[in-house]
Every structure is written in C-alpha cells, then in structure tokens.
Length: 340
Ligand code: SAM
Ligand code: SF4
View 1: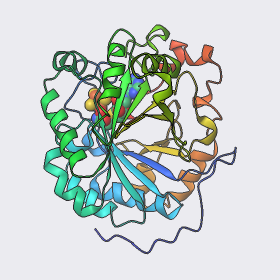
View 2: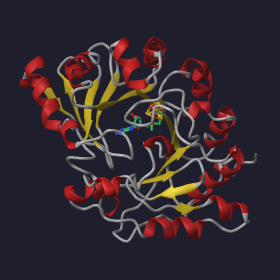
View 3: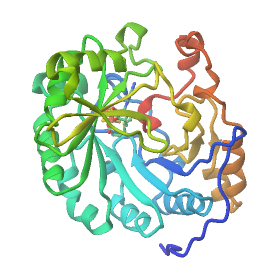
C-alpha cells in the first residue's frame, strides 16, 4: 500500500472542553491467546464477523486520516495485536508515518518480532504481566506461557527497548507481590505500572478489589523505606504517577483510573478492530468509521464529530456512585475488544 509520508497536519481533533486528541490506540484484533480473567470470559467472546473487521489496508487508511488530523502517537493493541494477520506489513507501513509507534502485548510472541521492531524504530513495548509466580500466572491467564513472557521481557530489556510492564493489581489476587515487582526493577531498566482493576461487563469486579496509589506506596515504604522513594516528574498527558527506588535501574508507577481519574488531560482516542472510535475507555457509544470508509466518504468529519461530544469525565459517569453502578459499566464492551 502507498503511504503518504509527506502528511502535514493542519488541523487537530478537539472536544467541547478544548482537549486536543493526538494519541490513537488501535485495537487490531479481538482474538487473544490468553484468557485473563479480568479482561476476557473463560470461553472467550463472540467475535465479530471477519467481514466487519478492518483489513490491513483499512487500518492504514484510517490511521493516515488520523495523522492528517494531528495524531502524533499510535499504539497497537488488541486482543493480542501480534495475532493480527499481516502484522508485519501494518507495522512497516505505520512506521513510515510521522508518528511515534508503540505496542501493548501480552509478550507471548515477542521474540519473533524483535528484528522487525528494530528495523521500524518501534521502541515502546508495553508487556502485560500480573504475577512473578508461574502457577498464579496460569490461574490469572488460564494459560501456561509464564516462562516465555518472562524471557521475552528480558530479551527486549537487554536489547535496549523501552519496556513497561502493565500489572493489573487486584486485592486478594496479586497485591502480595507489589514489593517483589518493585524489586524486579532493581537491575532491569524497566518501568512497572500498577493499573487499578477496572469494571467491565462480566469481569468479577467490585470496589473491595481496588488497590490504590496509597496502598502501593505504603508497601513500598515498608520494604524499601520512605527516604529511598524518589518521586519522578510527571510526563505530559501521562496517566501514571511514577517513582524510583534510590539506586534502582528501573522505576514503578501507578495508574489510578478508578480512584483518581485523569480525564482533564485526556488526549486518547480508541479505534476498535471493527473500525469504530470510542472517545473514552468508558463510553457506551461509538462512532463507526469503517462503513463510511467503505462507502468512499471522507471520514475526517466522522472523526471530529465523534470526539467533539466526548463527556468530561469517564464516559459521563461523573460520580463514583455512577461509575460503580453495574447497570452502567455493563453497557460497555469487554476490555479485550477495546484494547486498554
Ligand atoms: N493483549 C495485550 C495485553 O494484554 O497487553 C493488549 C490488550 S489488553 C486489553 C491491554 C491492557 O489492558 C493490558 O495491559 C491489560 O492488563 C489491561 N486490562 C485488561 N482488562 C483490564 C481491567 N479490567 N482493568 C485494568 N486493566 C485491564
Ligand atoms: Fe488477552 Fe490482553 Fe485481555 Fe489478557 S489482557 S485476555 S492478554 S487481551
């Protein structure tokens, strides 16, 4: 496919509150080779008809339109993005656009793609890992890939990639490993990001299972002592509060979507594998881009309209009472078809 590498964005995508959206997360597939209980039902999900999913050419065409509208950063996600047919072509072609390109993956297939990522300048690799215990990994993910994921984390760290580990931290499941995960950053140039467990349809969520920033800092202080915890500067539009233990190579951070949302600085747009935009992780409405693209329409207007009406906070659930109400969060897709 011919890529227009001379894109010169003259517009931007803004919402009614003036937030500029320049970060696109593309979910490439709904399929996954894990079944993490917090994300995906044990028997998997009912997948969209293949003909309703974006082809590789459609992914590129939609991505180019977003870049034309000022998107500067694209992250590939899923399901498991490395299962997408033609993933090599997608990465090669997207890497020709004037953007920074990253990927969020469960890490199982990473060793196959290290040369491609090096060639295409894909440096930002987020890998999901919720436990350092092989048996617990199997309980959480319902699959036996722990050793492969761990060895791929080391492979990418040793080869100089910017590796972040996404850890969904859940009381009673893996909160006993907070200190061990922080200790994991002692000799590895890796950032651990503890992500608060978020509610989605059928994922056994309840408020009792949330572990907050304060809970994590309490454990860090007990194990490494308060004076050794260095608070790092927040990144622009960053979602994590970040820290380093004095003398450690890596760092750790906390993403508090539930207890302390960061909607004010949100710059994210999510594109689902069936070509719809979600203007918020928690929105219950979506804007279809794939049908107008297939009809030969200009999708720029659909994109702008879809973002303009974004709610101020968490898909319109302003209070925790609203957000914790099962009737509201069950209207959303599962995480595996949104992409995180
Ligand atoms: N399969 C890839 C992976 O696991 O990294 C990419 C897709 S996955 C949906 C993207 C991210 O969403 C992962 O880091 C995962 O841990 C996170 N996630 C899934 N369900 C979640 C939930 N209920 N709460 C918080 N994070 C969740
Ligand atoms: Fe698959 Fe990622 Fe969801 Fe786990 S978190 S089931 S790896 S999409």
